Image (cartoon, rainbow, N blue to C red; front, top):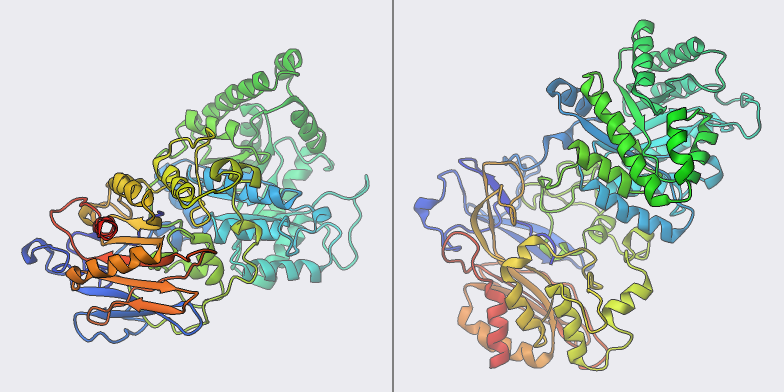
Length: 639
């Protein structure tokens, strides 16, 4: 039910990986740009259960070399190939303002699950980057699901977010810090916010064999890792509370930049003039790198007091005068905080001195999202560079092909391919590489359902009394209508995301077959030449076209399969299918000129249903066409 895996093709350009045979799809030869070559993507099962990539083209059908497998279609967002500092430079030159978001690791595993869901939601608004804080007491460099390292790695690899990992050097040896940096590099993290950190007691004491200041940490990063990491440092608009003076703190900031820092994020402040004075002082000190203001939308009385205590900041009297009378009214304080933050940000942006805004979210989304929407920085309808959420891991930057049967489980796919050295791009070329990973640790927190058990029971029912009650769960997921308990079904075990917009093109047909025992878990309509800017099926750069075959993946009973096989005989050259019953060990596959559609396997406890994949080449007029696969399923049921 998730996003299809089609190809966007800019007009007049050749892409040898176009996953559809133009003539078979019903497109006349004259309607196809001359540069398009006919080719088809093939996924064959490997011995270890994973999909083995292979590509057949119009020339030889043999595997292409790594070089020839590069796709000429500029289907990827060019920012994916840029470093963070390069993205900033380009945005500054164009005058395109940006925003970024700060989060901290939660204390519990369930909190981690909720935070990753928040990454997905807030990432949809288009932040240039996020950053994840580091607290030594929370074992930040470990493999715990609540550690800073794991949270930041998950944001990069599973949520596709450019991520900065905070790292402190307080009370840590050089060996420990170096180990953390190597681990961050191995996990795909390329950005570090270098901090000294807070001492345990009241007084700062240098660690023997460690680092005294953040500038020492920056020097160490550059010495050990060269230019691999983009390095950010902290600035204090009113001076660091432990500094001898504001001027002395500016000198320390200049030392951090001279040591190799690329940009600065400031501590929070409440008045624009505070930031402007800081900018002027930095300029006079010779600090010329980008400086991003830290914005804190006030969201509650107690959180404000705690943050002020930790940062040793003084809240302006005019803000105190407003908050004190309403300190017990969280909604009123949040509304005031939104208004105050919007006013502050507007003044900063209007000055022309601020390239972007950095928000301290406190892991909350409502206030920050509202502020960004009012400022016009939140992207309401983001363009998709690819049909799936793109991973920000550097080694995946050329990945532009994925098997369609993983469409509904993108995070599982990333987990199972995390050890691959190379990723398919253009066509399934020479990706002779590591075995497809097994989900031995499938229940890692980022693969868990975002919904708690109690909520799932409300959606699916306390008990399923008949096959029809199962059918209705699937139907309610598709329709979006409340079930008999008054709850909407927003996910299934195979679909933890909302329905893709394109599902609306075949919603009624899917509803009919699901209510009759064809339980669909993945599908897409056939699309013939829709523009890449189409709000429903479009993706990639403007000026391209989307082509995709109809596709259906489902569970059903053996009786339905037997009827379906009889129906499929009439469509021998137009439908590829793969049917598997794991209990019996039988596999019924259908090949057409060497093309084979691979299926995963599922089984139930009684009268085991059979999972099937059907893909059809049948297309008629350009534009969205009726999905053929549900029609075949209905024909089988009638038979």
